[in-house]
Image 1: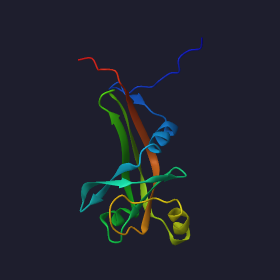
Image 2: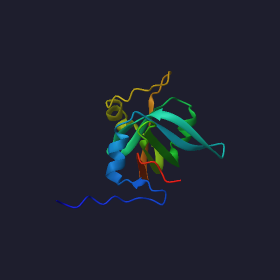
Image 3: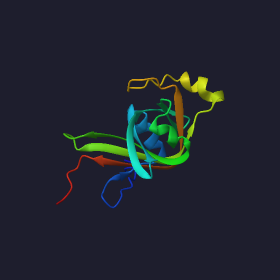
Length: 145
């Protein structure tokens, strides 16, 4: 019998996920949260998204709060899943620059069919290029008290 694969854990006993595992998990959920700066204060907004060559793509409306985040600002993006009965779950956080998708790429991105879940016209796209990727998973074991 072979040895069990080694699992890295953090100081809280959560499994530390690899970059590849983080992206696999992100592909399994349709909604995440973008964290950006609004009026010099942190703001969080739920968004639907898709992955495109390792980047997060979201749709926005004209003049939205997120439009300001597209000006090459550093943002965070988080998505997660949790099963309260099984005590299992994960969270992935990406940190990187957000930029508006340019005209030359707009048609290709529009073809990916990212349907907004919030009402209203959302003709623009923001791409977040992650520089930092972090993920953690809880394995269903009840922590010692």
